[in-house]
Image 1 (cartoon, one colour):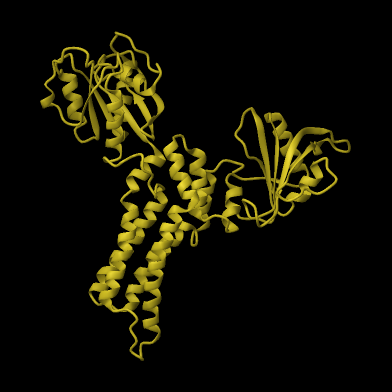
Image 2: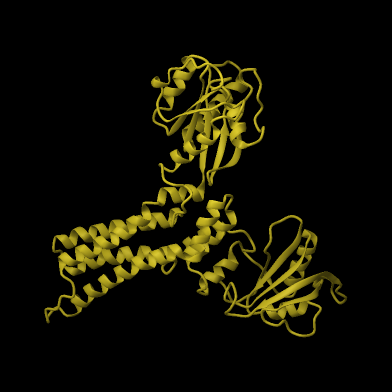
Length: 454
């Protein structure tokens, strides 16, 4: 996986037809391979877009032209991967792009593995591991807020924050090691009480990052919001209003929804998988019973449940059962049909409550805000979070745990050797975040989720 001495090629634009498509080469032979497949006598000039044509190298002794293209050469080390890179922009037909790809492979290039271009950028020092992971997050972003968080990390905001923590930790380690180097002379470059205070400062900096971790993960990974309720309270109508389209069938017949209906939506910048479920009730219908069981499973894994009640009817046995079953879950009780005379005593219902009318759309702006507030613990969703990746969060938490052990040890006048063990363990976790000390298995796991061509 980590061989970088060959030349790789891949289509760098999404599958499907488009006005333009890009085939990218990276490696020591990129200029030579491009010279072989381009109908051009002179070499490509660095960082100049050159109009030319691509030959079909798979046709043997009489190759024909594949397409008119624009080729751009980025010489090493001033390229996205740190190697020689040639990007060939052709018309966006899949047939044309595959022909360009085949020509490059016939001339000696190897088809790239998923994420291999970004991997080479990481190995050549063009990006650290945080920035490399941000590339995939930016490609995968489906809301503007997700894109902002990913781009901030690509720009190095989290890298800088981790580096600032590492500087303080490195300085403390250096002073403790200096004390160990001169034991006979009696030099102490840091007193135990001062060491405990310095460690506390580093812990505070880590805590300032972790305080936004839940919001960051929710922004990055999205959430699952399940709509539940008994039949005919308007669950599917609420689902359609939140989805912005008539995705779920709505009828006056109880039990219309038999299976889970899912739609990806944007809630105040948060990507959410909205799930409509079958109305909960006891039934002998085999198909409906299966739908009810699937709905129960969906409620069990939901990040948030919207429990819909018909406010024009008194709370029945099925409503009471659902209220009881979801007591320990994060939920919002949604009172639908607010245009009708209420027959529910709101004082007997748990907060938070939302009152809507799926017929007119009244109350749904407020409901969306309530959903975002419940999912993020009341934090402002419009603000980006510096940390959002589960791997980064876990490593910061492990680093903090080692630092906390060291702080308590320093307060108890434990010898420097024991302090250093915990401090170096904490620093190694910071190194793993940015990729200075990361195993091949971890790198493989990270880059395998990238698309080919990135």
